[in-house]
Structures are given as C-alpha cells and as structure tokens.
Amino acid sequence: MASAKYVFVTGGVTSSLGKGIIASSLAKLLQARGLSVTIQKFDPYINIDPGTLNPYEHGECYVTDDGAETDLDLGHYERFLNIPTSQANNVTTGRIYNSVITKEREGAYLGKTVQVIPHITDEIKRNFRLLGETGKYDIVITEIGGCVGDIESLPFIEAVRQMNWDAGPDDVIVIHLTLIPYLKTAGELKTKPTQHSVKSLLESGIQPDILVCRTEHPLPHDIRKKLALFCNVHINSVIESLDAETIYDVPLMMKREKLDEQVLVKLGLPHDREPAMDGWKEFLGRLKNPLEEVTIGLVGKYVELRDAYKSIAEAFVHAGAQNECKVNIRWIQSETLNREDYREMLDELDGILVAPGFGERGIEGKISAIRYARETGLPFFGICLGMQCAVVEFARNVAGLPEAASTEMNRNTAHPVIDMMEDQKKITTKGGTMRLGAYPCDLRKGSKASLIYGKTRISERHRHRYEFNNAYLEALEAAGMHATGVNPDTGLVEIVELPDHPWFVGVQFHPELKSTVMNPHPLFVRFVRAAMEHVSNKRLVAK
Image (tube, rainbow, N blue to C red; front, top):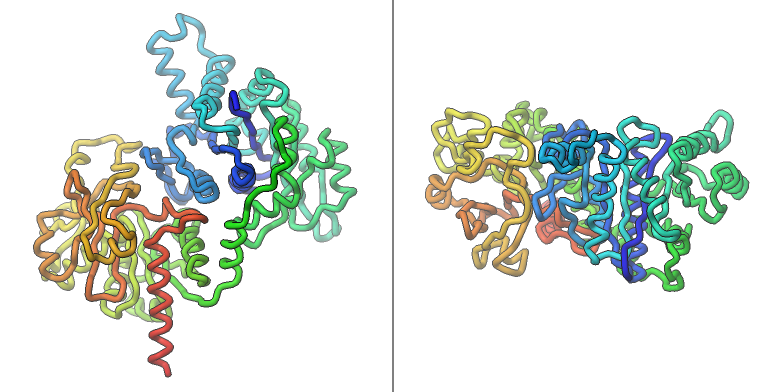
C-alpha cells in the first residue's frame, strides 16, 4: 500500500465510554484480516506526559519499551494487538505546544505571529502522520481524548477536520463513540444526547462516518433509523455497542456489527476476507469456562481507583485464562494492614501481590503482608516497590538488620538496603527522568526465574529511581535471599527469590506491561499456578 489510511475515534456525551477499547477492538479485527495496524492516543491535557500525574487523577502510567510514560489506553492497544507501542503513540497538548514554542524560539517561523491555526494544528497533523509515514502501517487509528465540545480538545478536532479536508476521498474517516441512555421511568432509549453530540461535531466542520453507540439495551431498528436520519449517516453505519461481560468480548461484538467491514468499505479497501479470530475465541473460551478458582490479594496504596493497577489486573486475566482458572482479586489498601489483626485479613488468600507505588504512605502495611507470605508459605509476588519492600522485610526480620529501610522512606536509616540509583542523585526535575523503558537482565541458571522464562537473558520495562543496594548483597544472600536476575551492564539487582519458599519472587521491573492476550506474561502465569497449588495443598490438609 502506497500510504496509510487514517481512522479517527472521537467521543461524545460523556467520558469513560471506552474509546480505547473500541479503537483496540477495531484494530484487532483489521489486523486479523491481514492488515498492518497501529493505534495512537492524543490527549488534551497540558502535561507533557502522564508521568507526573497522581494515579488517583489518571490511573496507571503505562511505560513503553523506548521509555515513554504514556496514557493507560496504550496498554489496551498492546494487549489487543500484541505489538509494542512507542513515544510516537501518545501525544499531549503539552508536547504539541512545547514543540511549537521551541521552534519559535529557534526562529523556525521566520518572524510570523505564532497562532493556533495554522501552527498548532499543523504540528498536531504532523504528529497524526508520523507513524503513517514510516511505511509500516496500512491503517493508523487515532483516538482523540476527552469529549467533543471540550475547550481543551478544540485544536485536535480542528486538526482532524483539516486532515479530512487535506486527504483523498478514501483516506480519512471519523468514528464517533456516543451514549444512548436508557430512561428507566420512561422505559425508553433516548437519542437526543447523541444528536447534540453529532451537532457539536458538525459545528466544528466534521461529519462522522460511523456512529458507535454505547447502550445497556439492544438498539431496535427504529432507533437506528432515527439516528441515521438525524445524524446524517447510513443506517448500516450505526453500530450497537452493548455493555460487555469482559472487554475481550468487544472485538467479536464489533465483528457481529460489521464495524470493521464498514471501515474498510469507507476507506476503499478490500473487505471480502473474514478476520481470523480463532486464537481470540480460544482465549475467551478458557476465560469464561475456568476449571479452578483462586483469590489473590493485591496490596497497594491506590486501590480505591483500580485503573491505577490496570495492567496488573489484566495480566491476571491473561494468566488466569492460560491456567483455566478464575482469578479473583481482593483489593487491599496497604494502610489497613498496620492493624494487629492484619493476619485475619490475609488468611483466606491464595497468593499476595504487593504492587508498585511511590512514597511512604502504606509502606509498613506492605511489609506486614510480605512477612505474612514469607512465614506462612503463601505464594508472593512483588513488583518494583513490592520487591523493594520484600528486601526491607527480609533484612529486618531474617538478616539481622532491624533498622533496614529504603532511603525513599527514611533518609537516615542505619541500613539503606534500598537506595537511590547513583545516576538519579543529581536529578532535580521530575518529568521523564526516572529509569524508564526496557533493559536487559541476566538470570541465574537453575533459578526459579530462569525456569519460568525458559532462558537466561530477558528484557523488561522499568520505572523507578531506587534500587537494591549492592553493599548488602552478600549479607542478604548469606541469609537466604538470592539475587537471581541482574542487569549485565550496571549490576543492578532485578530479581530476588527465596529458594526455600514455595513461590516467593520480587522483581524491580514491571512484567505486567508486557502481558497480552496472545502472550500472557510467564511470571503471572506461574504465580497463578502457584496459587492453584496452594489451594490444592489446603484441600489435602483439610481432608
């Protein structure tokens, strides 16, 4: 194909309708037809990236191989498509304005007055096209964050209008995701919010090509006909998107509604080939027909907003399906584990995952949970800060260093078993300055990690400033904690294990970021299996 085609996904009526899931589902169907597809997210906030945003504000910060701190929707893109994203796949208003202002300071505009049109919109369009111009993709799907009508989104919407105007007749289409609310008292589905949302788009000069309608009830023919008439789209382009049991149902739901076929027709592309979705259907079959069930305690400090741990939750879905096991996550606020009765809260669990995070709040609760898992033989998995807490707990209660701590929590600790990385100590700015992205790790032969991965050299993604202090490596190894994964270039300890424990693994990196539907992460798969074995052992004891 000579050049990429562009599909824009906008949202109306309300936020959180699932533009990312619709974009990912469409991309999956197009990919399953043999097309090369990528997805990008344009966010209207002024932050350069989500890296400095509180998880309570924005959910998790997703990290790519090349070290970009991005919106959590990029996690959906990777989980559905099974291909990595990059810095180019997430662009914010902040990045756009930063680029334009930098160019202005360099004299790139030759003294012209720099304005939203054309300079800001030109920069947005340049970023719209970046991935399409690589020659790697047949179709680039672009999700526009926020809702149509938001002040923040106006430059992006105008840039979409210009892309439509610039392009050939079959090169750009717009999908508008909207809400069809059901009024229980009236017993009716109401189309007026969608009509107003489309009217707002029309006022911006954009006629949507396809409507995707989120709804709790099926759309009858007369409602579809009404939407088509008042929103000026063909009735076949009114797509029903019912609430789904799982987000992984959505691609097949969109296939039944022929969303992918409508897109291909409007882009002037062949549409006679059916999507090859057998592997996806097999995954759904295992997901919905589990043979076993386990309960994993996810101990974190942001559990009130579960999107703060979105990739971990989805990695458990993937690993559960692989093991034909339903994984129930019990969300545990780490601050509640400071009470003396915390053991009663953990007794019914089949495994404990101590989640990533930053700052002192809830740390002692995490350490209490880890001690419980270590002493009782309960399967334990620590990620990033969770791994660091495991080191602190072991140093305090096994290695004879009762005052051990991380300098992130206690700068004056007598035993800084976790300390700030040397190359981080002179850094004063916050955004984009952590250890970010994919780094290699060498695994000790015969270790649990090497057996799980089936190899001795891996690459995993990172997001941290603090590390295992190698000054304590010999003492902790002698006490029984093995460093089984080490960065070959820096000596940074990446994985710790307790070989005498049924399953006790802590990792400095974020394995959840690489788990996908088609390739569940091996650490999560084996952790769930360890929890299943724990359940079996409890049954034997009970008999």
